[in-house]
Image 1 (cartoon, rainbow, N blue to C red):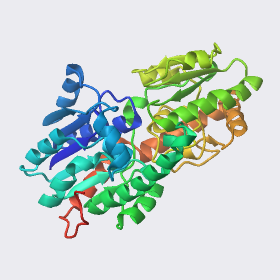
Image 2: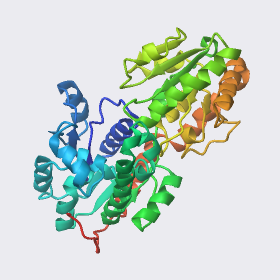
Image 3: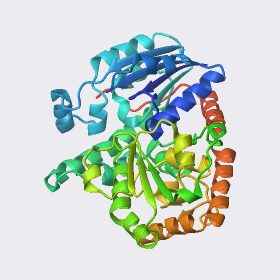
Image 4: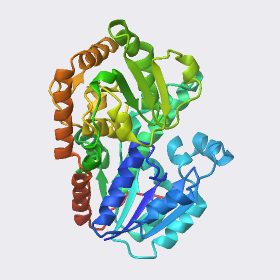
Length: 405
């Protein structure tokens, strides 16, 4: 198939779960013979080295810069446009719309768009040409308000409620125009099907299981790992909760434990906010195998978000014993007590971490059970096959809701 794939960020380097998903699905589909043009609308420049990585498996790479977040257009649209704030931030680009118009003069078997918030520049052209398109949504974005808005001041509450209302309307508007909506978990699929008014298939998040098979966790290190992209509010909430409430309870019973905080976009002031020397501030770590092999436990204290968590899947694929909330294992068919230890409170998660640290003879088989589950259900080859089945089912739309407002 000839595929036009559209993203609001570059999938390489893979500094977040969403980017990791994009990179591996694109590479897997290309390896199966599909010819892919990737259209990026990115807030960061794509370096020559990053371009070269992507161009090894793409037919064409097109990058258009996004305007600065604090531009006057974004500010005015955020206040007055019918689109939610995220859609205004990632849309309203005349150059992007013009380039998309040109691209749709060519034949495409599939147009693949990621995220409802990136859809605005493509809406009118898709409606005019009746081009079938697939929309993949990684979360139920309208339900992420607690993590997205909770850092805004109280006086902004009226705007928050207004923007959440706009996002609910926008989600329905976009999904009902899509030929097919795709979710990443069964629970999200059920919710999105009600919004879209049609069945929503699942294309799971995946892992390069052969790669992560090389990891060998070290029970003797007593190191607890958290990994995330800190531009994503649910990850910030998770690590703040861990360092404020969970780790102090772990240290009461296991004072030699260490906490390794890794990932992209880490704020500089965290080092002074939590000065305990047992916290290791590593930032973005490109060599995950070495990192995972130096750790004993993966902690996923997530309270917000949706979809399934790639960082959790990668930890499981590496054989790391897992302590997690229900949100941390959402979308995964894991058995609590067999594949991981679960809890919803700070005390419960601290108990789970301590048990995994103090009883490695029980923790190690649990890590291996998680590794086996991921290989069985979440290898990227599984996800690519699911997406190919979605593509094979496409047919042009016969009805559309009014668009281009």
